Length: 328
Image (spheres, rainbow, N blue to C red):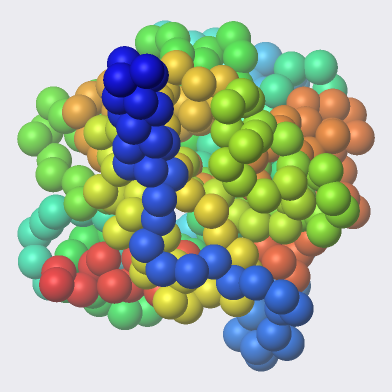
């Protein structure tokens, strides 16, 4: 009995350590959209429509689809590249089709450490147009770049659009985010935070619309109406810090967890590459396949996305990044 009691106490402590988050998630009816959120929703829709509807599947081995996406994204980021904001193309080595990461550096008043926002703009194989995975994250990164670029913050901010996150490149040497993270490590770059913006635009208020890998199904809500902040155990401090800041500002529910990376889904995006190189990193996500029935399917189209709720997330993230870049 003593052994069972000790085991139960240890289990409870571990669960609390991984899942207890500061602040309170928004509950009840959402407040009316602000004018800023309404404008952001329209901008997000425009970007996702261009990527998922006008271009569609985005892969280096599928004709010129990835290059067309890169051209569009480069054009959008180039509008911001003036003064202390610098845009560069970072080729992904060892991969077919000449894929590249796009890197926008917003210089800070101080040299560092850096706040990095990243999203992959390629799509999964099989003909998916990738509106949610990951047109939503890419669009969010573009909007955040526009919102953050006009102000010189105390700390530098970097926005990176990654190529080659999807299979067959995921967790291989030809993964765009892995090469970028390795470059950060080789250059001795210090990162205050890395946020991977991954599959962010599908929401549902229906009971049972949110699934989880066991045993998380007993710990989190069963309605897919929230945005999630997900890190590994080593990134627990960043998960807690970022979600606490988010909850002070955002007009959408949020959940967070610093979880063992062996759990399905926890490391399934570009943040994994930064964990591998010793950096704290957090995935901001709607939980992808655990919620969105169109994940990696041809039905992943723009009309499925809730751009208003995605806009609430983006505006909340803007405040998080601004606070982190204030060097407090």
